[in-house]
Length: 170
Image (cartoon, rainbow, N blue to C red; front, side, top):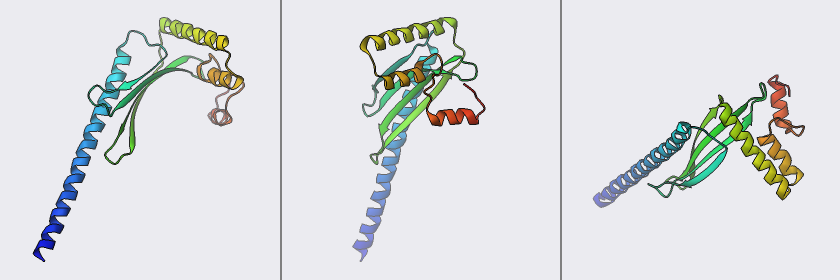
């Protein structure tokens, strides 16, 4: 009887210790992932100028952590000004095997004339590439909606409804 009680107590202690270790590992991974996302965003915001880009890689400290940095344009519908959205995301797998994501987003709204010129030049290069290699109509509509200087007639119905509800006219 004493051995069964001792076995139950030991197994309970081992389960609790295992869960504590898993929680500590998860917290360490989460901290490393957040630090990597923060470093990527700080590097991006500290740059003299920002252009459209997409980068990805793996953490130098922990190969189980993958990162991605995306900078894309967004045409603000009310004033038609160009904004940049910077998204730094980091993915890792926790102790239970579930994929976790940490994402930091920053809107760059006050672009200098130099930055706007670089973005226009980059868009023109992309348009020339699209013309040269002939994308289909569906790709063109998606490209114009995402990167165009203004919205075209093919706005998705759910976005059109949201803009109408907000009182924003196109």
